[in-house]
Picture 1 (cartoon, one colour):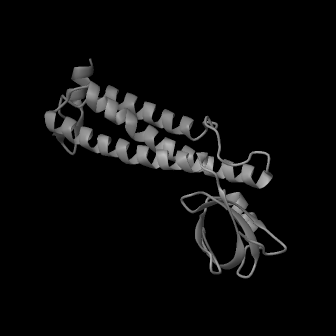
Picture 2 (picture 1 turned 90 degrees about the horizontal axis):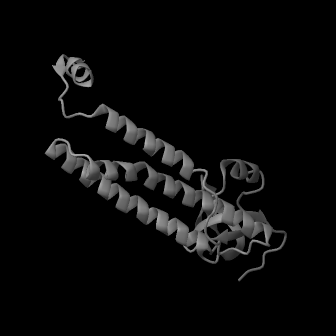
Picture 3 (picture 1 turned 30 degrees about the vertical axis):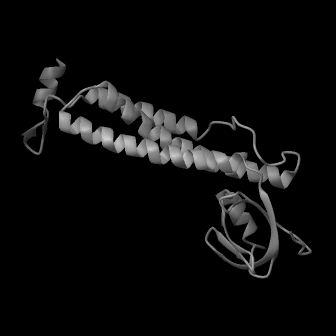
Amino acid sequence: MTAALRRSLRINRQMLPDNVRFGRVVLTLVVSITLFLLALHIPAFMAAGADMTDSAQRDYAANIWQETQTSLALVAIVLPWLVYALLWRGAPWGRRILLAIATAGVIVTTWFALLSAQSYAALPKQVVGLVDRVQGRVIALRGGGSYYLVLSDQELNADRSWLRPGASVELWVSPRGHAGAVSAVTEVGGD
C-alpha cells in the first residue's frame, strides 16, 4: 500500500523517487519539534554561579538560564537529523549532504549551548555606572563598556521608563558581557 501510494504521488508532474521515506522524515521532524519544545521548558539542572539568596542575582540566573534553554533547543532541532542520517540509509548523495549539514549543526549548536551553560555557572560581575545610551538590547555605560541585555521582553519593556541616558544603574553581567539583571540605583558607586 505504501509503495503504491508513494508511486502515485506527483509533484510538478514528476514522480517522487521511491527512496524518499516520508514516515521516517515525519517521525524525525516530530521528534525534533518535541525535543525543541521540551528544551525550552527544562528547569535549571546545574548550579548557578550567582548568589541565589540575592534577588538581583537570582533574576540574573533566571535570565541567563533562558539563554541556555534557547541554546539547548537549537541542539534539539538538529540532533535528531544527525541520528536520522546515521541510522537510515537512503540515496548516497542525500545521506552525505544530510550528514554533513546535521553534523555541522550539532557542532555549532553544542558550542553555543556550552558557552551559555558556562555563563550560567560562572560568577557574575556587578557593574555600576551611568547609562550613556540604550539601543535595542545593547546598553552602553559612560566609560564602562557595552553590554547585551538578556532580560525577558516583559522586564525590558517595564524598565524602559527609567532606563535612559543619565540613569544610574547596577548590572549583573556574565563573563560574555550579557547583562542578566539591571536595576536603578540612587547613588553611583562602583568597583
